[in-house]
Length: 517
Ligand code: FEO
Ligand code: CA
Ligand code: CA
Ligand code: CA
Image (cartoon, rainbow, N blue to C red; front, side):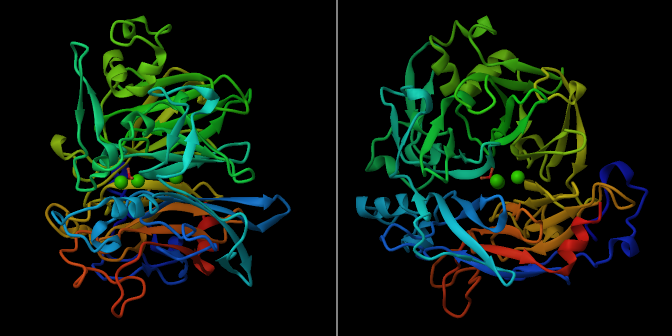
């Protein structure tokens, strides 16, 4: 298997002479492997301090990365935002499932999720974190974060903490968006029965934070905006509450801001928010996609009166988006993950990672074409751009980034416990793929990086000049049975436990690939 055949042109083969490099074969090595011509360096690893206060340490399971320069005239210095999606108590607490858990341990875990705002600089080509910079800030599950616009959720204008931060986005006005994904893993979830009664589902995993901290589940599952200049964070209820993978921002011709977001759960939906404004996200309309009819359906009690029977207020609709979307006839998807928008066509690409219950094990990348290429349009067509599987050589696409020439880079997320097992034996460890979008190799996926054992690459993003790819290596050694014998010891090896880390990828081939289109 070469990892290089596109679904729509199975008869056609890639032209390696035009490609100029030899893609990686699938690998099970416990290391970060790159094609010849690329190299990587560690930028920061779990638990590394970057400030003087005890909480100023890099969190666990780094995900989304995004860079904003501090000054437009100097692209070599700026803020790097990094999400921390989750922890692994086997490595952070040396705790096995079933071991006792206390409040002090949970509090330490709460410091390990959220996000890190880092001041980074590039000198002699290499990036580093500026130690003790006043810009370096941690946002954790203990940080007080208000709801935007002064709205109240469950009787409070302020939430304690942000958590489950998966992917995100950047606003045109220079702020970061960080998305709360699997929030139900931390404080459980409120259940709304059809007769109007409510119940509660505890967190399904073994984190059990709710045993020690009684925070309302409704305070999580939102998109959070962080302004790196003021360090202020706010939770936007306008974008709805679900397992937000990402928040991909674009602007319509009239300057209106539009944000696309997927709900990363099997049989959940794709959403878009159309702001009423050019410079904030506080007010607007949230829509959900019916991809069969090609319609965006308003999650709004006035525009969709059939919602009035189930929901007393618009805030109820926003808190319970999944229920409202189902009432409107939205189309269930195979786990919508990251979203990117092609710069030339304005086509919207959406990773659908898999849906095992529906027999989709390897996922696809869906393409939505808005009517008249207008992000504000309420009608669209959709088709599959790339299909995972043995022919294409990849499985479970998750995070994407576009380079300056519009080529697509995406990472895969075969679950830690499924890597190497049926039906994934031929795919090797998770990987980073490069897809030229123009030329003779357009639409073929080429494996350019292979992740350590148990790990997933997440959060790929480019520096503004395109010469560096920031990449998170998340959960190396996931599904280890003991901390004495972890499945991975990446990146420090010897007797060290595995450590999630952000790396920078550079090299002569990167320049060549980015100019390929
Ligand atoms: Fe956190 Fe959907 O990956
Ligand atoms: Ca993801
Ligand atoms: Ca992305
Ligand atoms: Ca994922």
